[in-house]
Amino acid sequence: MNKTENQKAWLFVLPVVLLVAFNAVIPLMTVVNYSVQETFGDNTFFWAGVIWFQDVLNSDRFHASLGRQMIFTFSILAIEIPLGVLIALTLPRKGPWVPVCLVLMALPLLIPYNVVGAMWNIFALPDIGLLGYGLNALGFDYNFTRQPGDAWFTLILMDVWHWTSLVVLLAYAGLVSIPDAYYQAAKIDGAKSFAIFRYIQLPKMKRVLTIAVLLRFMDSFMIYTEPFVLTGGGPGNSTTLLSVDLVKIALGQFDLGPAAAMSLIYFLIILLLSWVFYTLMMRNEAN
Amino acid sequence: MKNPSRFVPALYIFFLMLPIYWLINMSFKTTNEILGSFSLWPREFTTENYVAIFTDPTWYMGYVNSLAYVSLNTVLSVSVALPAAYAFSRYRFLGDKHLFFWLLTNRMAPPAVFALPFFQLYSAVGLFDTYWAVALAHTLFNIPLAVWILEGFMSGVPKELDETAYVDGYSFPRFFVKIFIPTIAAGIGVAAFFCFMFSWVELLLAKTLTSVAAKPIAAVMTRTASTSGYELGLLAAAGTLTIIPGAFVIYFVRNYIARGFALGRV
Image (cartoon, rainbow over all chains, first blue to last red):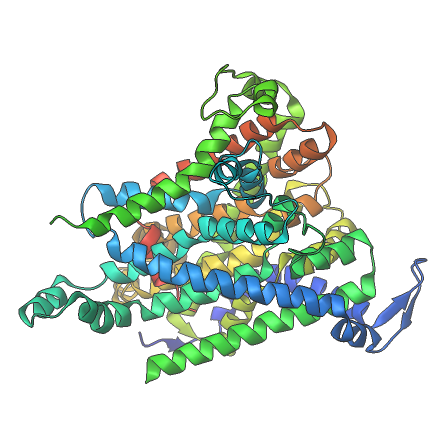
């Protein structure tokens, strides 16, 4: 659409700018402020320069949480994106079952995060949970509160349960936008179903899949409540992801300086990786 | 068309329903039964967990509080996003692209980063422990989302609609309310749905910004889980009740779920 130049449009966006600025700029400046100051707990602050940033960047604790966060994020992306596309491909495109399927699939997306954590906790308990009891009955030695491997398995399974539907909905939206004529043409040409997928469906889904990857990347990098409720970061520190660690430092130990420096580094990592993802995928699209 | 691949969605939905079934199952069991044995369905069916929730103000007020700030946030986000989205879809102005991108970066800010500064900010302006605090805090990620969705819907409306209305003698506010808003009603519904959803499921900020008067149901649950021992039945019943508003809302926008997502552009 050709847009007209109109500086008065600023008046329309002003309420949004004010509200978001109040919520984003002031808190962000508070964080920046803490990140360069030192305090001894009596509300007096001293200039501290970049020592907190150096501390955080050199601390093994931060490296370990960041490493766990990366493993978590890339595992769930590797599972949820292909699985979501597969399910979207096998969903019927028309018929009375479509809305039923979509509503049922969207249900996990609408459950409060801590309820998701609590639900999976109850579901996975080794003695009374369906999953935990079932796995033990099948002969697996499963206990997510004691064994780090099991905690990770439960955490990833929970995220797959929680968010794969988002990928399904997005991919499905891309699929239903393909006109029937494309399929008819492919049929006349005698195209195999893989060829249809590769040359018709995948290109049409590219844009929505870009959104899906970005949203899943960002949200999984910020995840806090579900792992906190499910495992509390344990056993030990084995499932302490970045946010869980950050809240421990900021609200638990009230170490303002290090927490603020870590917040900024954390935020910058998300922005940087999102940007990298976005440019890479846009470049692929251009080719 | 007989197709074995149809089993994939069925299996997936079955997998989705299992933990939900388990939660509902637990909510109808007595504490003794939950801790005493493993059973696939309640042997001594009881509604005492639900009765406990509906007769205890700390419990049911949690729902009232959650619904209050979620509704407030939805109305607030959509109503300020409407004119902004209109501006982005119709006009070019100084810094428009940068502004749009800046709005979206707020979607990438981890709530954990903002928890402490938000606590201090809202305490300083005297809004701590009110519906407004949580509703305003949640606009941080809901306004960008609402602008983004609404802009998508508005760009689909041809500009001739605006021009014809002006020729017919409509003033801008009258055109916006009488013609434009009904035209994009579906988009408003979708935006409202996503605002509702993201405000309803968020807990970290909601919990940080409230203590007693505006405490959300999700935070009441965490308190109960830690202080009054291991009342799993009660926890399960409260959890089951939090699923209902979402299920209710999603039924109304079922035809737009996919469309709403498809229109989004990063």
